[in-house]
Image (cartoon, rainbow, N blue to C red; front, top):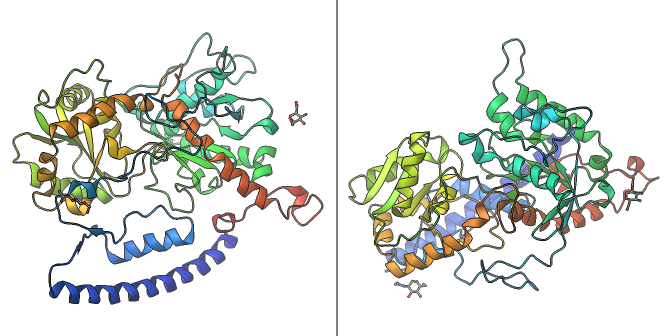
Length: 506
Ligand SMILES: *[C@@H]1O[C@H](CO)[C@@H](O)[C@H](O)[C@H]1NC(C)=O
Ligand SMILES: *[C@@H]1O[C@H](CO)[C@@H](O)[C@H](O)[C@H]1NC(C)=O
């Protein structure tokens, strides 16, 4: 711990120097800007609703290397109402060099890419299927999924069930007749693996076992995380790479709350970065996975712009922490619009049926930042072919390196959305042709968000493995670099790598 503090302090003071410099420059630029504005019509800067300090911190984090992508800072914006400014990425979806676009989804063709080789720890069942009340017979730690696949609990638990689908896919890769359509395969020899997968069902552990037992101080969820950290850090695979080539699933924003601070060198599979410090998780190192939608798929959708009566649909909780104030502002702005459905209440039981109906009969579905930047509402909207309107400045989206969301989503900055009449005028200005193009695109891409067993080519499971595989070259490069001075007889004990703090690591 002490080792961690010193570099952090140095980093902080550099950061504050940098901030001071930036504050001064910004103040100078602002004064210049006000002079210009008072002399006549000039392009306006749109305030993104952040305080100057938060903006500066975001910028200096990015400079520090571990920060999130900061987009569109200080962008010069033409007059309000021009839609092109609100959609990210004007260019066509960029193809990866050498990749051929596949005709169905316009995504890079993955069929010729090498299959990712994944070694999976044989963790005791209490970390995975044991949490589903599956009991091991004999010494085996895995169910024989050829005869029986243990069920994951339904309801809202399923939103974060990513851990379960990925584990099942690895298990089943051993029985597959062919690797066609597969992006990852389990290997038994860790030296031959590209990556090491940690099969802990962390979201389920959080959802079900985070209440402390009255007789013990710690919850089962906390204990499992402690056990996991001691197990992992004792493995030769972990020591070989310092954990860098490990894949840890922590999709529920509160899962792995304790272990994340110790396992940060690993690649995390997350819903968003909302509750992570940027040096623990960030877009460079980690992978964003979709939620599993709770609203059922709209199959055989023959609806259209004219047959969906509701213009804009939102259903969600009202009082949320952090970014939630936008929800309340929007409610007051939109509550009197006739063709807008805006109501508060969570999606439970009967709620799911109503929300299904509501989204399937709406043209646009609102996704507003709640207590975290992401929510499963977006994936419910996609499953309903309801064009998502995303108001969440810090949202990170799954597979965005290969998928252009501006083709089927509308993005509005929070600071714009809460201006009077801005959002409603903007939505009303989107015509039938444009809406229909987005609706078509939604139908083409919705399969990318489908979790199922057995997994099929191009579904969420395969897309996540591919996103993970795209991180492998940079992991290798960092590993190789870190080995430059790790001689077997040299100063690093037994050639193993140990990283003292996120700062040294990056
Ligand atoms: C919107 O902005 C773009 C880029 O500045 C400009 O080319 C276009 O003419 C504008 N469209 C409208 C309708 O104002
Ligand atoms: C695992 O793979 C490595 C490298 O290919 C090889 O040297 C080693 O013998 C293998 N171990 C086993 C147990 O097969």
